[in-house]
Length: 126
Ligand SMILES: [Zn+2]
Image 1 (cartoon, rainbow, N blue to C red):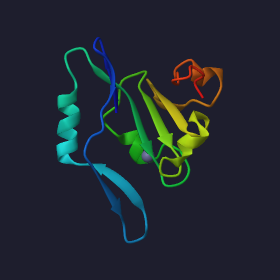
Image 2 (cartoon, protein in one colour):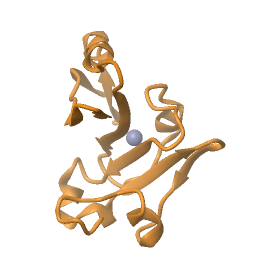
Image 3 (cartoon, rainbow, N blue to C red):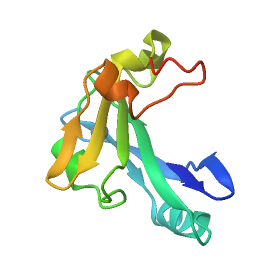
């Protein structure tokens, strides 16, 4: 999770546990301790503004991602990195980037519409 407030911007990585079902489905669960870490991470005016996580293959927002209660405010960003995070080697264009709007999560396709909301360290948004 990425938090932002008057003190600046910071990355918060909560405790997580990987999980694989007998059918091979994989997921990562934020543990109860991790949930408490997230709750304690915010100071007065801070807010979680973005979430970044990875999928084993393609980058997309799953129904579980849509239902995640951590980010529900308008303007929040959700970034999904493909191939267990290795997709970041191809830059942000390989990732799914979604913005929370009043009606739900909206996919931001690469280009000016996405660059309006995302800035990378090199300033390109890519
Ligand atoms: Zn996901």
